[in-house]
Image (cartoon, rainbow, N blue to C red; front, side, top):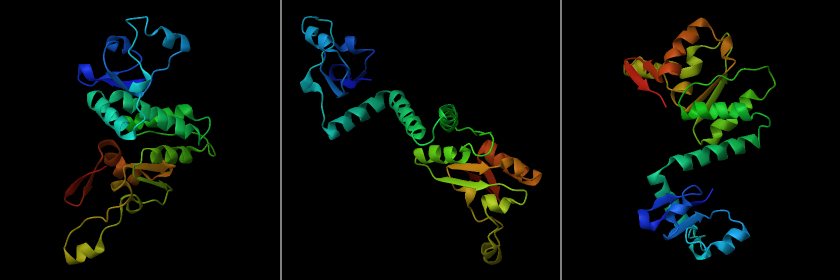
Length: 217
């Protein structure tokens, strides 16, 4: 999709859909629109045609960065969409035939909601979650749950040194308390006690660590 800014309209964003509105304006393109040779030949004969000339297409990285920044300030949504599509496309080049699963995980990430990946063993579920998480450049942590997994394994054990020296009854923060994206593999194997303990973490993104209520990433 074409991407540019119109200087006559306060750096308004110009795309394929609204080029005609800026036909008589000076437009600087970060990504020029796609045109056929016939459209380019007729552009000077048609006063309503978009004002697209080769000199106004810049390849200067600094100028492109400035244009993209101006566009993002005006309306960040198109750039966010491009980023999400790029992420999903990149994941699909690593994990094959999981496009719908990738879309679901990306939607969960955008909405800041918990996602559940369900399926038979050997379907690359763990790899898919890992690759999607890493694509967003966020801290990622995963663990495989068993019947013997305790809360200490998920959020950290109690800090015995602080208990002894400072009389503070808090856990050493790790795992679910310190990472942006957490994947609990085989969560169905967890004990009832563990499931009850992590409900607040999953649903409300908070954890009561001693007398301190932690707001989690």
